[in-house]
Image 1 (spheres, rainbow, N blue to C red):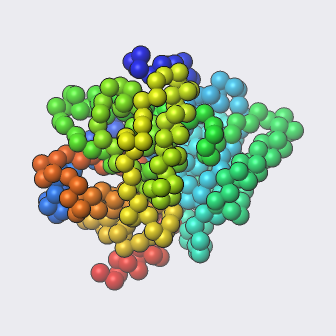
Image 2 (cartoon, rainbow, N blue to C red):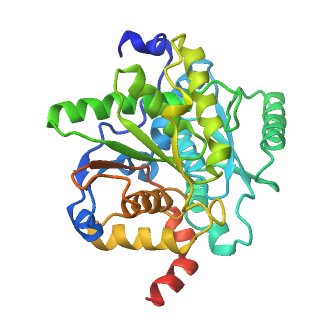
Length: 346
């Protein structure tokens, strides 16, 4: 890493992701939309537990956990959390125990949602599972997971909590600083120019880490975040705050200003983890034109947001746009009833 990233190389890292991931053209989708030249960065192929961006995000958390000689990992997240699935797989790989707390973030879900997809994988990886009733009570969820950790300490365990709420060291975002360097190197080697990268903006670890990493490495490449949990007015200060946290953690200049943060929340409604016609269309188009599988929670909405930008004439006809595929495919099976109904109706 360069001097622009300050103390970056001093942080321990457990290398869990299979990287670099490939970058591919999407000519069929580009032609279908009659828009710019579309590309995909295949972070769904990071390997661990069916891949995805979380394999990158957990590397620095697990590096710190190993340095602290932790023997049990705790994490809280949505029922169909990709983060939890990836962390549970990593604990199995590294010989640790895993305790996970599943939050009720999505209303009116059925038994398919509660038992298949990521939940099934969590169980296969041997995770001990708890429930938390309120998906929007970050402080309460944190308190509860800390109480579980206290109980494990009394049993002689050495727990390590991977936090998801703001206010903690942004170790997850550091995984996408690594990805920023990887993308820039791939573009340099291929001679390909990219005008914009389109990413999911949820916890902000991917969005903020990538944006911060690019600016720290001297790139002004534009990043458009597609809101998957909160609207753009709520999300913008969270992205900026995460970038500020990175600056403080690494001891660097604050590279990011409000002008760097571009957000689109058109595909968000009716809310996190809930399907809508734009997302269903995007999932179908990616599969039918490029053989690319997207998930209903993140990448489906990100693709819908990118399509909205194409149809809104945001890009010049000859522009090059990179879609960051962050994985999440196991969640497709959790949404089988809704997706089957939508597919059968066409």
